[in-house]
Length: 333
Image (cartoon, rainbow, N blue to C red; front, side, top):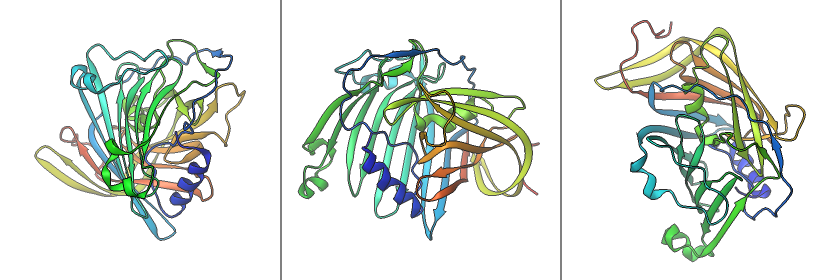
């Protein structure tokens, strides 16, 4: 949603240890109408409930660090329907009939920047409905988002000058509205999700099980991207994080049994996966490696390549669980 120059600056923030909890998309200007190419959809996925309510991660690079917290809540769709705006262009992705998942991501970045994102997801299909995003600090902005069959409609506001910074986004006067509609897109009916939902969807698909796989279509920058997740073998990894649940808590420190999951990305219209595809996820490009706890699917770590700085690993610090963990869950050794 931000321009290419903005993406370069965000990558440099990551080089200072920033954890960007979602992708930045180059959407600051409306895309001109172009002939459309239809691509066949990926197979549907079976998604179940997730065992966690909230996950907290951190990353460090070059003596600086940042942290992000992801919270997921499943509610009746009537609870959020009044906040979902109708787009001024394009055909809106329909709301689910009964339930919706609200994913809220809060990220503390270096140099006084803070980001809060709310995204609404259809739990039955993984389709993104829309959401809201606000960045405070340097280069502040606010966005309302609404997914459409063509792509994404955005209402954007930002301070027109330094004097508007403290006024709040409701009074920022630099305002734009635009529809991003890539020329090459999935066929009608293909669910398109959002990068802020990836950890929720990876857990819901139970990729910690042997032979599991997942294909997701996302809008990253100004093009659609297909991500393919493949479960690999089991291994032990050293980890330390806290777990809490209603009525209890524990610290996990030691070896945790995890399944390695590899994810590759292919831009629609490309013949092969590419290392240069912007994933719109944690500022990473081309491919991801996830370590999911065997038996729960809890994402213990995520690794990938970030432009300008190389490999970056994001590690779990705290997990708030919906219910007490199973007694046979490996507590570390």
